[in-house]
Length: 143
Image 1 (tube, rainbow, N blue to C red):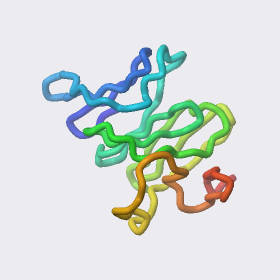
Image 2: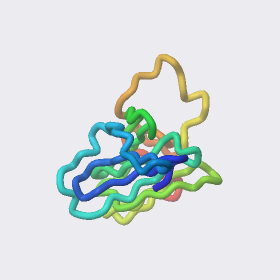
Image 3: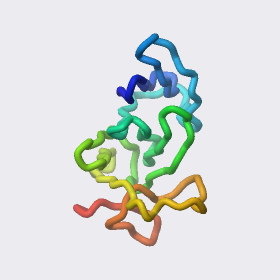
């Protein structure tokens, strides 16, 4: 997956690496909670159009990271089983995930009013505006 002049990869060791495409070197950015040991199958990540963020499937959650610093922004929750794939739509900034629960979820970025200086970092049911349920699950409108 390409993010600007950088490329991200996830190997069988479960680690995400950010490569500088101009010189072919690992940038050594640490992405917390992406090391899962030996990965039983490939991980299909998605990136935002500007390459600023990327989306990493981790079990039944989708973790959002800042590409160049490795900071973890949020965890998107909604699937009941492991996520198999993710893809981004550059036209709408939506991210799509497919899972063993046989669902495809659509994730939208929160509105600009969602961002504030007082917001705590960490896990959240986020990235979705419509269809959010009070019990902690975030579903797309098609459910």
